[in-house]
Image (tube, rainbow, N blue to C red; front, side):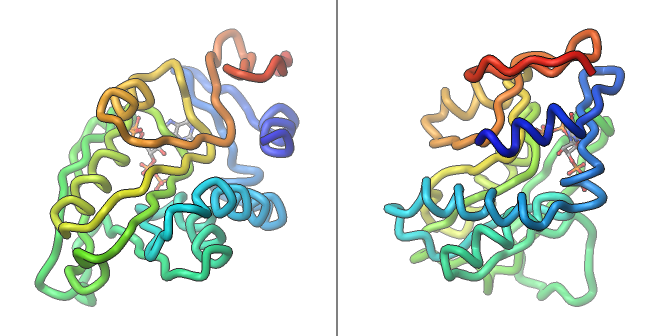
Amino acid sequence: MKALQDKILQEGRVLPNHILQVDQFLNHQVDTALMEQVGNEFAKRFAQERVTKVLTIEASGIVPACLTALQLGVPLVIAKKSKSLTLASALHTADVYSYTKQEATTIAVSEKTIQAEDRVLIIDDFLANGEAAKGLLTIVEKAGATSVGIGIVIEKSFQTGRQSLDDQGVRVESLARISSLQNGQVSFLLETAMIEK
Ligand code: G4P
């Protein structure tokens, strides 16, 4: 998605350890007009899938997932990372290991929100090693529901997540695919855009 790539080139910052900081438009301050375009693009790509629920994980996946759900006219379900008193006792859970934080978290969704007849679209902001995506897939599976695919705003294609989801036969639609974050430069996989930051 060109508008997203342009924004990454204009406002993204490459940090050490191959981290892309996008606090100006996605992770901290949010460019709501751009996120609306993101939601519309995911809704278009998955339009034929008869999606009944969009599923994401707190926190940064919520904005793009919400705008996708709004466009598709379906509810958004947010997997919780911390135990919440407001969550019902009957939960679908999955363990997610974060390589960046080097810790495992149990994510949870109430059994009341995703059911066997649901067709679930998973949306998240980043795909790196794919641990969050796999955890969300596990929750859909535990609910006996159908996963129609995964929409990712920014994919770090040089990490293992994309390949491992492809190997599992999961449909992944990423709006920006980054092939490297070396020497302060952002390079995209498919498009030719490349710029010194
Ligand atoms: P994985 O889920 O794909 O395996 O990712 P990983 O464990 O490597 O990343 C853990 C967290 O770091 C995730 O957010 C992920 O979105 C984020 N992340 C990974 N690479 C980058 C990057 O280059 N830039 C930014 N900005 N974030 C990155 P999280 O812990 O779930 O945090 P949040 O959603 O609450 O913000």
